[in-house]
Image 1 (cartoon, rainbow, N blue to C red):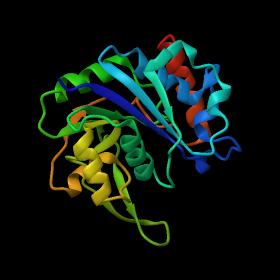
Image 2 (image 1 turned 60 degrees about the horizontal axis):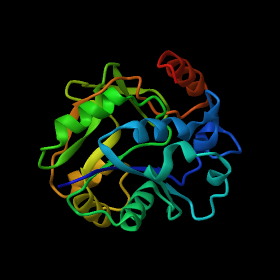
Image 3 (image 1 turned 180 degrees about the horizontal axis):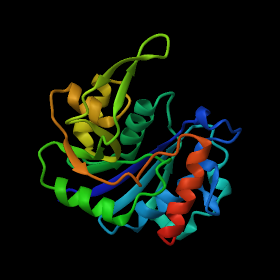
Length: 227
């Protein structure tokens, strides 16, 4: 029987935050930011193992107390230069069965909930391809020209904003990342093989912390969630 595992790539720095610490270790609601994603993933009964893939020279992760998660949390010090490298290296190091499901989640999406996870797993557990959490684009989209002026308004019908987790079979995902190593998310690599991942409707609260002001919103949401 196929198992469910989570993989959190955490080998990057997050330069847009403008901070000397890697983004995943910035303080958020009394914990390093990465704690909140790991806490939600480890609390999910469907998920067997949560792999966090770190840079080989990461010296910060072990300075925090992760004992509450027990053996379910497994750090792997094999992160690469790009996100796709980190995910692929993590898949190889984890030695999962090809048919096992892997939920790849951003360390900088701290407001993921159990409801999000349950919906993703239930909608995809019998899917032939897999898929991602996403939200329909609500705002009007403008295409800029080289001078920073509006070139045109883009049609937003049918457009979705991708989130994570992105859930695929371990074997298929490894094959996709080896074939298309420079794409920015896992779904893009699967698409490059000719497959069509499913869109699972999520909520805007599962956003990615990218800029300093995002920390304030994330802390507010985590407080409302009782975390």
